[in-house]
Length: 248
Image 1: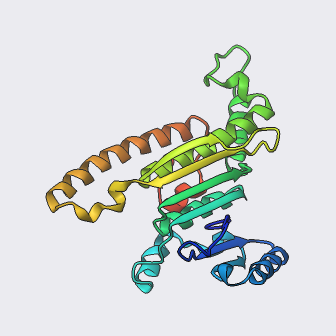
Image 2: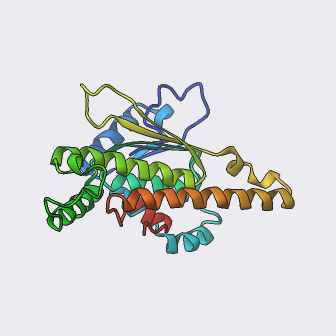
């Protein structure tokens, strides 16, 4: 996980403050040493050891942290490359807390949803007799473990995309590299909506109208989110938990 992973040259551009987080202390020591050896152009690039979850706060802690930090630290770009399982959700929440203008993630592993999907399908199949009609349109797909794994990836990232939209971001989901290089080749990009960036420029009346319309859109997206989750037996999702949104 790193705020900015590519710094081609800082000699001709404004200084960029960049911080990378990795759980491997040995790797962190090595790349901090490389950055130091590269000299002054890279003196604002640093890496710290730890899990991203250690650097984020819960919804209840956020208000307290913001009061202590006079509004909290801001972040321009957050990038998370193959942060395993719910670490991607922790990274996204890290960016949301700090109102990052851009969030870019390439997820890896989807264990949280896979466990719930397995449990949901198996419980359904055990109570079903051969004479009963199928009650899920994907019954004959979900009975195969390999397809449950693939669908778990799609469900997980679709939930993340909806949650980012609810948080006020414009999102895109696409393949960023060929499957011959890695099967974990889906990227989610999120740009903070310009209305959220410039929300202080509107007068009070316009703000009230915008908030009302935004709330209606959010309610619709939350309904879609809950429908997607309930259709696959998903009751827990780390990013939804961070955001204080129930899937039930």
